[in-house]
Image (cartoon, rainbow, N blue to C red; front, side):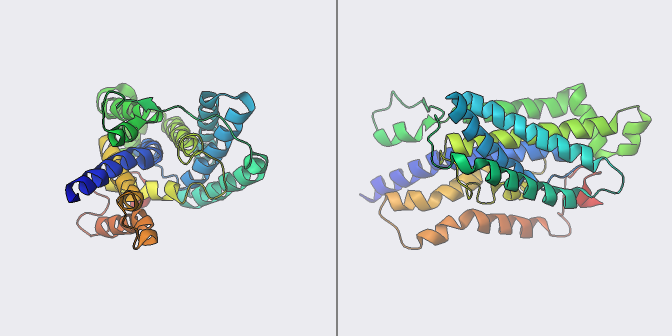
Length: 306
């Protein structure tokens, strides 16, 4: 009996890591692209919420969930582009404008999203990867959302692209040493603007996951601070796409711990377990702040290091 409970707990955590960790993956990969160029975007929370609202509205109006995903990516790209253009102006602080962008994105989402709180939009269908398994628990855990394989593909492309392409080299050069990039005639401003816009598009897709997959609805308290937590996640991942994947799955497993324990009949301290991702974020920030490890691997031009 105890062995069966442990199996159920393990399955719940594995399935929950994928289910809860997917939006963390997209937002952290987007912020990784942005920060590789030497810019930080604290407006991710606003982009995430705006992406969730626009995805739900787009899916409802067109009755196509994938159209909703594209709407979310477009809104995220536009907000990221706004951040990139404004922060390219003289004496504009990335951190301050990022907070303003967060408030703008959340405010716009709440204002335009009021009519879509009640209606039901089409959801993205699951991929039944475990259909051949007899155990219903594994079948449920392996019925993954289609955005997760897309996130894995994006992780691999970024890992390869940062290391092996001219675009990746230009991005890292701009982020590590702006003076050298300018000396080599690399368009610093354009690279940072495009990187911030691409990062915003990824965060928008993360928002689409929240409203079209899990929890699969639109409400004003949908994101629960995941956009802000993604900044800490990128630091924990040391600005590496594969590290972002591992960190997103870790955060997802932490978030799934409470429901997994409930599934085996353990409900004591349920709300405490729900706070586990936030406690993990705090622990990561404390661990990363040690003098000999602070921002190790960070791009040299990143606002956090200057």
